[in-house]
Length: 392
Ligand SMILES: Cc1cc2nc3c(=O)[nH]c(=O)nc-3n(C[C@H](O)[C@H](O)[C@H](O)COP(=O)(O)OP(=O)(O)OC[C@H]3O[C@@H](n4cnc5c(N)ncnc54)[C@H](O)[C@@H]3O)c2cc1C
Image 1 (cartoon, rainbow, N blue to C red):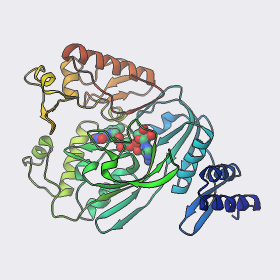
Image 2: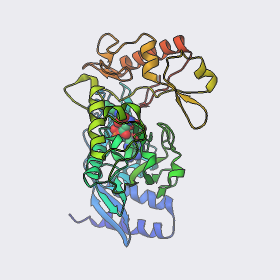
Image 3: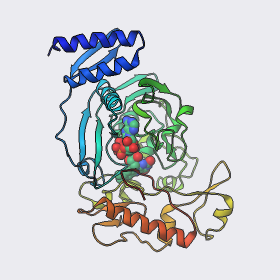
Image 4: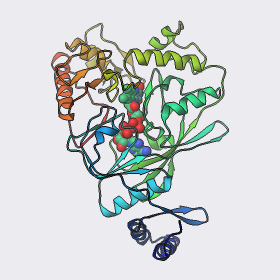
């Protein structure tokens, strides 16, 4: 389809504005072009124009887009299938002051029953480009499909992250991790739209400030992740095993090596036994994964825990303990709760929707658990999922 003359004219004017670095004018023209139903994007030799992807009907419930199956309506929802669409939708919303929620697979989101009064941008970009061991992956690629593909090609580095739901673009947000690996170990660059400047740029791992279930992205609205580059070499075995439960499941010890595909199978076994692999038929997986992070305590606070509490020393002298253990020892057994929100019957860290729950009910249970642990152990649990329009 050919763009009509006014759109072509506005695109040419925008190009000139870009060339003379008048970003305000360029943004205004981008908005004007979008309003006429077209998406303009910068290319190496100028610009391109594509018809805008139709909006989904307003008021679509976000419960349909989260693994908890919770959340009220979005004012509007746009599915961005190209990077240009993703960038333009966010730039346009920023220019008009409309709130933006970037949505991946909704597996780490707790959305208010009132929904989201702004535009929800569903990331649906695809593509993997390989250059030697470096894999540049579009934000909208499914994480576990990517893991399976690289392991099938004899590559290693993400085998212990098998079975984690969600999209590649979300993995840097909380430095996704499990069974002794996290993405910080293999990420070499994160391509982002920086919403403060409106520019696309690549962040180094240092700039990402990765930590335990944390990064520069978590709790910040500044960046939209467009793609992530991972360094995943070919190797005869996976990375040395770092997690005791995984090593023993494989009949090995911490520090031993095992073939990456065998590590994947063992991880999937362990995850399934804990309800941590999505299964629409199993309400124990209608969750956001672990609802609380494992607390990292000062040595003095850790010393006050009962002697049998799990303790994992951190490099900075602090001590990580188990949120699941604290919850269980505070009197909340697997399956705890009445009505439509309960602890998973397989894992005390997952708060689950048994079919007809509300976000408020979920938060009420989370507060009960947090209070119970605080009273019993003096430790305040921090929530792991991103809360949208609600607080604990
Ligand atoms: C059963 C289950 C098991 C899980 N197990 C684990 C686990 O072992 N380890 C672990 O770390 N996590 C785990 N999780 C949590 C979750 O899967 C991860 O955090 C995952 O990376 C979220 O991806 P998503 O695409 O679903 O992101 P969403 O839930 O859609 O979004 C999460 C946050 O990231 C932001 N976001 C998403 N995409 C982008 C983007 N492209 N640019 C900017 N911001 C973005 C969103 O705005 C939101 O703030 C689990 C969840 C479930 C349901």
